[in-house]
Image (cartoon, rainbow, N blue to C red; front, top):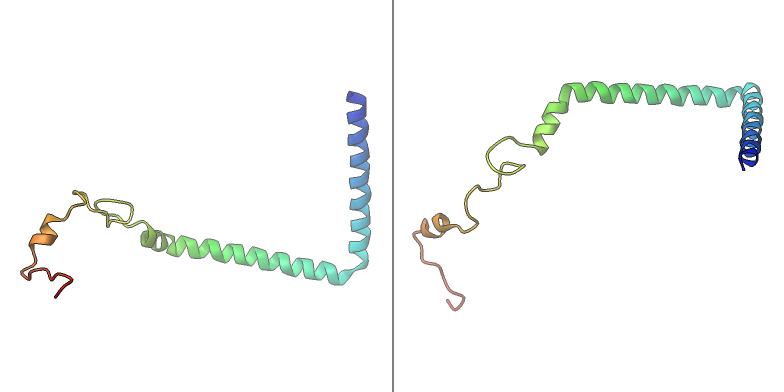
Length: 101
């Protein structure tokens, strides 16, 4: 079984080497493809650098929008007391209207 695995691995390695050499030959023949690849690689590097610099400058501000500091809950809006609101119900001076009125 080990012999069969090593033969498969060597065949796979030979195929990859052939593909690599064909790619290298094609690359040398086609200057436009190489120029486009270099341009896109430079654009990717520039974009990643800009994202990194922006995150260093504004990362804390962006994080603060989503994770507010404060009492209760992740966003600071969850009450620490019971879900019943006796203060809310008793603070109104108006009587509650029924559906019939």
